[in-house]
Length: 237
Image (tube, rainbow, N blue to C red; front, side, top):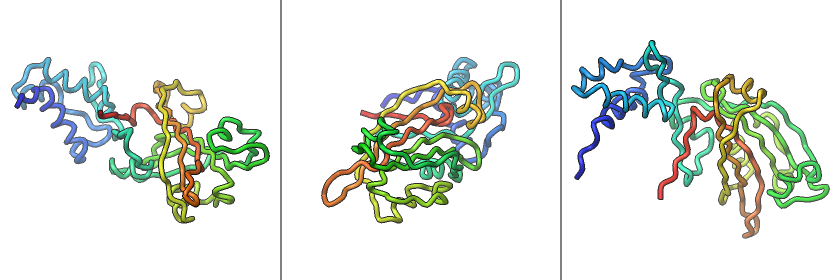
């Protein structure tokens, strides 16, 4: 069996200190000199480990000051179906939502969503935008369309919490999801809502299906704009 590279040992050790709370958001990571002394490795090896942690969004390296723990990071599998609430729980944060806007529109006024949801003409669609948070920190913006043919009425109060908890309370289960990912630059409004300037957004677009009388029916079309420094999607073949 091949021996694990030395830099991976350093990387894993610092990562575990972040995951178990030994190092919290904003804390300074041990310096390169301290890590070299701790492990007996070269400066190049330690630097590579810290660079990897920075690239994965766990730490920020500030020239002349050192390395600091950033926000907790979500590593999400493309094959997984975890909700935002479950994502936040996985990194020890409490998920939240703040409703930005809500309206009911006709399919004719939302043609892209209507096509995704198999609706047309005067069919109605719930459309709402929410800011998703973890421990009250802005993490993502969700732009959601729900078919009124499947869910005729939505309690606006539920939109300040977990939408899927509400959907499941109605007896509606999800059968499968069609998903697309793309990278985007944020608009000024997205920067304002996410309280961040120099970021890239990871946009996850998906259609969620349920089963009605044995037939697969789309009921949700959503674009979620994640702060790219917080979310990483992984695909394993």
